View 1 (cartoon, one colour):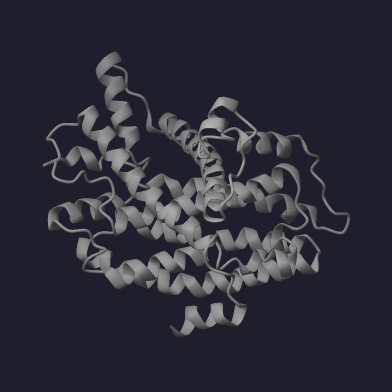
View 2 (cartoon, helix red, strand yellow):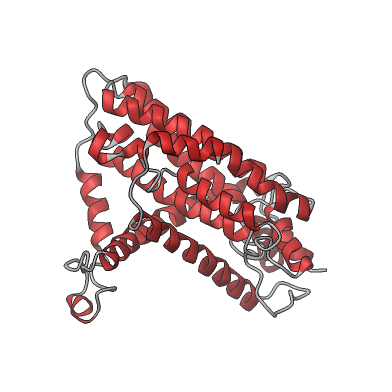
Length: 345
């Protein structure tokens, strides 16, 4: 029953093309298109998240945030819709700025580091079930894929810190390595509950298991849900765990020597990773795209796929908002407190 939800998006595209044209499209031709779509989604979602964070921060701090870019009539009527083009303007500014490589930096790793971190983000997204049959590839080891690929982020950050030949960048890279390695362990253990309940490592299977049980896995595995969410904040170097980028101590940490497009790639990766970990929480602990009180149809229907995707994005957006709320509410913790929390508590 409802086996169509387990098929990847590429398979559905192949089936539609074959039905309409009678021509079989090879899977190798579908995958590059899917990866480009993921890259486009990451770019657009990051632009929206950066604008949303500025607005959330402004509301929490009782100010208006960006207001001048975009339609002025909106800006005059609403504090939320003003400045909608601010992030796009910032992106254009960074694209036009000169790429400066410090004279004492190691140019090879210095250039590879931002490319690697964006590549890691794109690769991790391919198993996320954005909706019924809306994952690029439903790997049978989907959770392992996300955890393994995401752990490569620390490699790019250490490369950036080391190759910059700056004491601030090096300290930021080493802090990030210690922090991410420390919080990987509770993060992985927190996922064991849903994995054992579902009896599978596939992201779509875990979502379907929550439908079969009739309860989100955040209920029987509530402690794992909280631990994973807190550990994921530390994994993506978000405040109050932003020790690697502490402006008051390290200027900007491992990105101190970066400018232009290379700096923009690190900035994009931060928000892409934030959405990624929230998408994993929504899928593994909060039922993913399952539409409450509506049974899954026997055959794929457009309205169910659309509503399921909207449900998934609604859950993920709430988790992202909470992460932003935490950033602008709690002060930065000390490095020793951060390590004590990860290893002892």
